[in-house]
Image (cartoon, rainbow, N blue to C red; front, side, top):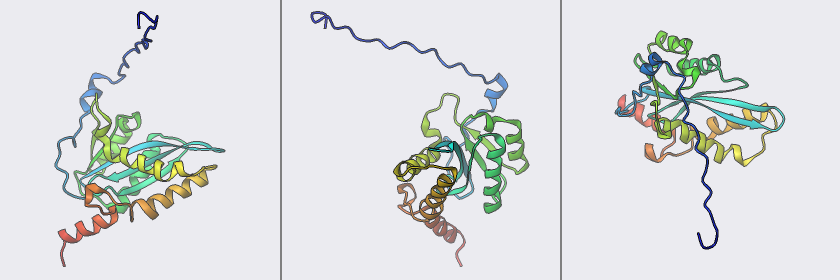
Length: 208
């Protein structure tokens, strides 16, 4: 390289991101599911937000809650905002459909919506426990959500052009309700779909 007069390009050093979490906030950031033996439905739910772009109506935010054990999308909503209010709308849908027992863990990243007093108070009111990805976490600490987002976008969103909010709402509904929950198989649950797995699991726990 010296003989040829070639020099390597050294990338600039980017400053480390500084956390805006207070010392008290950091104490609340605990990953309760990292080494947890998850063995049943309604033991752990996960939640996250992903961006959905449309040509004419702009960007929307898809919020989902997933049962970690069965991989089933319990509830979802597409919004033009991603505030705590929207998170709780979707969470309420999941609660109404599942009626989970006390002690359910709801796991998420450390977004400000999930760290808000309103969100935490809502979980406490419903006898739920909040859990977060670690302060210096890797992407696999919310693997169920990451996997779902990847499948949704590769198998659905990126396969077509979404022009409007209505387009996005329709294709996401068709994907989740018509394919992902009832038909899409997962190796982690014995190559069954989430709904098939739940039916077998519930039946095995409650035989006639």
